[in-house]
Amino acid sequence: MDRVTDLASKKAAVIFTKSSCCMCHSIKALFYELGASPAIHEVDHDADMEWALKRLGCNPSLPAVFIGGKYVGSARDVISLHVDGSLKHKLIEARAIWF
Image (cartoon, rainbow, N blue to C red):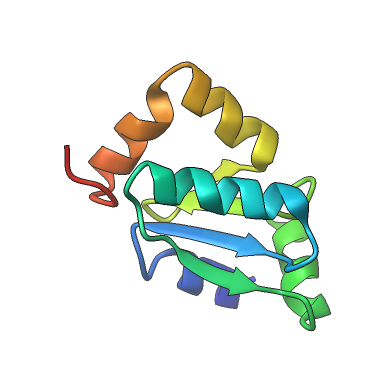
C-alpha cells in the first residue's frame, strides 16, 4: 500500500491501469485531451500492486485515478466528474493542467 501512495503522490495526476482494459485507455485519452500528462503505472504483471489498490478502497481496482495525491475514483467516477465540470477544476488545483 505504501508503494501505491508513494507513486500516487509523485505527480499531480496518476493513473494505475492495465494494458488490456478499454476503460483504462479511455480515461488516459480523456486526461490527454484535457491537456494533462498523467503518470501511468501499468499493473499487468504486478498482482501485489492491484491488491494494494483494492485495499485502499479502489473498487473496481482499475483504472485507479489519483489527482493531487488523493484517490479520485475509477472510470465511472472520473467520467461523472468530467460531465459535471469538476474534473478540469481538480486538475487545475493540482497543477496537472494550466488554464
